[in-house]
Amino acid sequence: MYAKKVLQLAGMWDCNATKCPMEPKLDLTKDGDGEAVDPTMYRRLIGSLRYLIHSRPDLAYSVGVVSRFMESPKAIRLKAVKQILRYVKGTMDYGLAKQAFGLLLNKIGPEQWAACRWSNSLALAEWWWSKSNEALVDIA
Image (cartoon, rainbow, N blue to C red; front, side, top):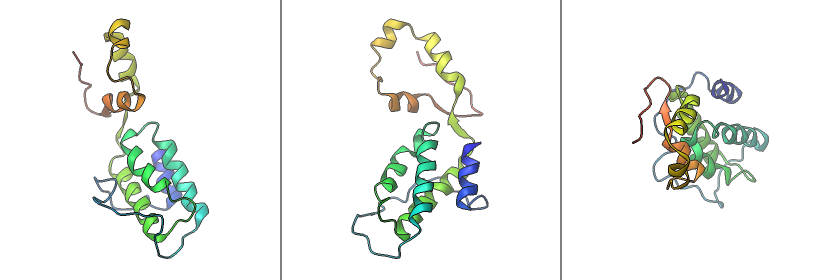
């Protein structure tokens, strides 16, 4: 599982889990002061999280925010990345159900598919989002 590899890369496999990917009202600015951190490791973590977004669209916003600061990573920004990693740890069983796409496409005809108001791929990904051990809901 790729999420496990990302946590091991960050040295956070044994971290405490959380259910929130980002602290509410977190204020990260470009002109942030603070201690500089290893830019190579920061960029490696961000790249790994960006790859993980393909199967975890719930991470898109949080990873997008911390991606803005790759040119000058600071300790406060690394703290936000670690919060995302703790969220990944707490939601290891979440992901896009691979069968959902095919099943739902079989239930929706081409006419309905063309008229679907959720043509944005991110909205579609969120639409089919489910916990891996829960039953899929049929959309009528």
